[in-house]
Image (cartoon, rainbow, N blue to C red; front, side):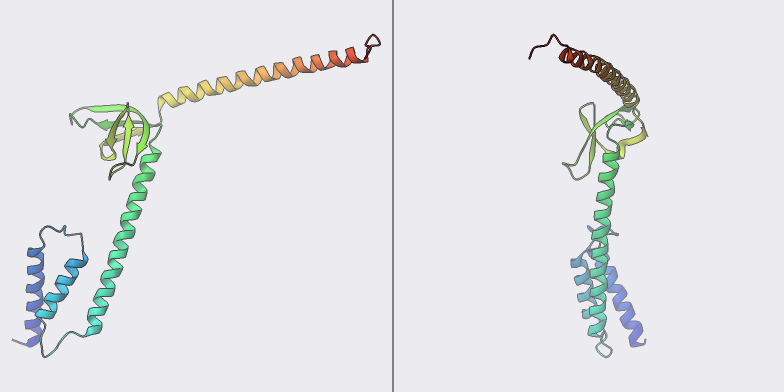
Length: 186
């Protein structure tokens, strides 16, 4: 057996041992401890006649550091997206799966967004629910009625202001007439 084949088999064995020893770690999760263990295993099982160069180890460590940073950025982006998604639901009518009975749904307007736990939640009828229960999102029918009511109120206020302006103009003319009247002794 050639020495390079032996090294390849030893490295494969070391990787398999690492995978068995680290069953607690999720397959998609990479940690610096796992990287260091793997690097030590490679050192332990390397071919003494053809050792791995220091530059190769440094290159692997640099790639690992880049991978960690990319994973951190991905996590931050995911968190930011969850916050934006949660905030976008405020004031909208949602249908969610009832957490107490998976065969039922709850429909209501999202009163607020909460960020006090690890995962953002929405509040419906005074109770917090995680986002993963949301099945459907629609514009709130209550919002449409409220917008219509606000529009009517604004139109009423505009009419009242117009009437006041007309009355004020009339009063202003009356005062001017009174002041210009010769009977005024000032």
